[in-house]
Length: 543
DNA sequence: CGTGTGTTCATAT
DNA sequence: TGAACACACG
Image (cartoon, rainbow, N blue to C red; front, side, top):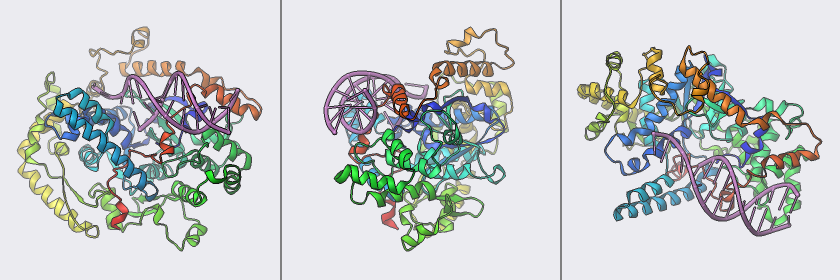
């Protein structure tokens, strides 16, 4: 997923940071990355739609992190993936087959009574469906967490938000696992953030401007950087056989012009370069530069960056390779989480009575403290619980979103009132899941929800060593310890030295020879997929 | 020797 | 799905 080996290549530019550095700021969240991780623990349950609280563990995982951010006074803006970009359609299809295979095998194991084996296979079939995302969306709504569903790539949407002023809904950084964000030009991305808020940050401006670090991008601009990414192999286009991030870098650094690089590539690799590679290359570039994003201000789709006239003229204005343009009404419905971007079916927020009892989460050790009960009453009127219900969909015509939404909202209101009785128990359930109320400003409460409560044992071995640390807040103390840990683990970052051009290679190799060797396999079988997207069929065949 | 490719293992709880 | 490791290719 993402750009092959890009993060390793950029290792010298990684800085260990704690997310609290963005306290008071708005930060974009790539929803997929957390949903995917969170789903590991309850994959089988999700697939089989099993009854029980385990099915909702992914929500707990996600909200735990959201609450951690709120603890540090960060305003999270959660961004979901929308439909697939055409370049990706084929790979998504392939991905589907894989998942299906795993799922089928898992079902076999299950029939044999091998639950563990089945569970393992289900984990290989993790896929975040629009329904799963929508469950989360409903919780975010109830918790007043800002979110947006991108028309296509969440990455592009995040890049767009990164370029906006804070007052206009912009974010100052992004939390994700996807290196694509750098190709899209996101200024600041925090990768691999753990549950305490420690992560690896890459700041694009630093990558492009820092003098003397190796590899050096001083002669690169954004476009060349993105070009390097595409050359190395990305989700939209497999790289030419034999070309990885290192060679891509060297080519771009040497010729500093994409067209020349393509010519040289053709000359050197001959038939290895597909006939339509240059065309496909430019389309991939165009996606990274001009992908369609949702503009909340105008409530319309617009290109990530302004379209250059060449792009329009060269194709007679046909930009469907970016994904079809969507009418404003559809774009809004998708962005606000009312329309499934893959199937164009409306989501229904109505609670499903048959699933109600799932929400009681007869979880063992969780008993409500008086504090929690207080919180609960504060939350009165909140519809948090609804999010735990299975969502159903009403099939509608893609061109009738407003009608569909209307029906939905009607149904929602009616049912909600009729189920109001259940709110209490359901809110209770959420409490048990560990979702503190947004209104709850109690630090202790927050800390408890973060697992920082003083009486909760922390398995961080550094905790004890730092006993002498000032502890106005134990959470802070722990988090700082963890920060130190990660810094210690990455001494090589600090020791980057300046060398001549030639040594760019050797230096990198030195540093990475051990860690190179990723799964470029995706590339070879044209299977670079991003399990990300809700794959479903070809969204575009409908259009 | 440098790079890309293929395999394995842990993933969260 | 990503990270780390061993191997093969040019």
